[in-house]
Amino acid sequence: MPDLLAPVLAALASPGRPSSDYDLNRSGDLPPSRDLRAAGVLVAFERHEDALHLYLTKRSSHLKHHPGQIAFPGGKVEPTDASPIAAALREAEEEIGLPRSHVRVLGVLEPHETVTSFQMVPVIAEIIKPFTPIRETGEVEEVFTVPLSHVADLSRYRVERRLWRGDWRYFYVAPFGPYYIWGATARILRALADRMQAPEQSPSPPEARL
Image 1: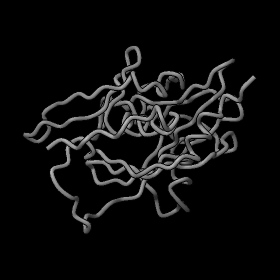
Image 2: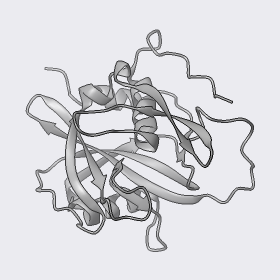
Image 3: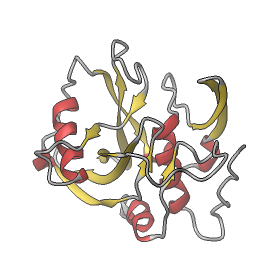
Image 4: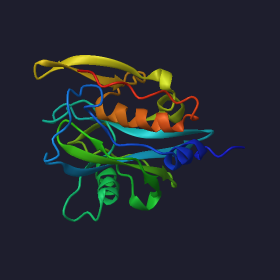
């Protein structure tokens, strides 16, 4: 029986490149002097019978930033964190009750830059021991899982747009049931899905829109 993690490990071994919320919206080069804050997010998979499932959260609707959005557990790198990996593990423990001892880090993807000036490192990991999610009620409204087969399927992604600060902003979406996965979360998952394809199947990256 093939190892369920094989496609994920193959993706980590494949070449990639940094992504950003500007990929579909860039009208010029980003200024090199911009001030980016380091962050880490945990892209954690767990074996459910004969499939891998990814843990995601729905952010509280009461939050000031990104209320109600679908997100990975994670957050900014604090002074006590040794690295973005450490930040991702700490935040996952705080947000969904995932003990660090239950996680095996497999690797990282290239960083993703957000419109809110974070440089997020996606930390790919396997949950190696069962745990019961306990959400941090101030930040997390819901904890749920999505099959790897959904987020690895390029046909699940489409580009949508909405007005943001007076301009049309384009972004990836990959809806799953009642969950509208979009923005940075969908872009990171799209980058992972791209790397999971065989070279002859992998599509060319989309042109940035003006």
